[in-house]
Amino acid sequence: MTAVRCYADPVSPYAWLGLADLERIEAAGARVVVVPVLFAGLLNAHGTVGPAEVDAKRRYLFRDVMREAARRGLQFAGPPGHPFNPLPALRMCTAVEDDAQRRTLLVAFTRATWESGENLMDDETLKRLADAAGLDGASLLVAAQTPAVKAALADATARAVADGVFGVPTLRVDGDEELFWGADRIDTLLWRLLGQAIDEEALRAFLAREPLSQRRR
Image (cartoon, rainbow, N blue to C red; front, side, top):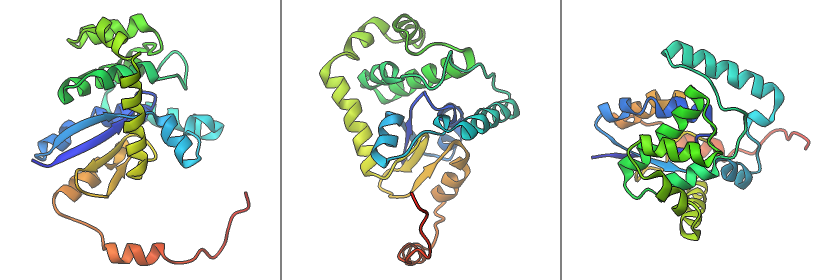
């Protein structure tokens, strides 16, 4: 069975929208593996900032997310403040060894903050949400503080960067270099799973062209 990796961080509202749509990929016969990564780590590695850090983009982003949520019939509440630090939640998810349970927890955390307004920086909230997801929240909170789990999340983020991931959610078919970034790219991924593809030689030729102008920085 084809495996699709979904790189996600609950700090992103688009990760929330993307995680809510993974069943469409599974309906196409693929297995989805959710990989927690630190969005801020991706931004730092690529020398960029998040859209919520640019005022005009921030205003657009949340209007767009609320509009898309309403279109899908999803409840939007949003976290108590944004951006927030998702490291505690991401580390708890990383501490879960089973792929299905890790996905369940990350989805639960993401839905809780965007649909119910929960604070993912509060340990008691994280414990309660993990317990409600059928996991041992207290044990996961302890595991999240261990050097091994912290290193595992850092390594997963570094591997994502090495694979070209720069934002969340990003989807990737195992064994394929092609990335699909954004909650609105699931249809394109499904097209790829049907065996469709662009002309890679034409892409390489285009990317090899020298720029005709450079923006001053």
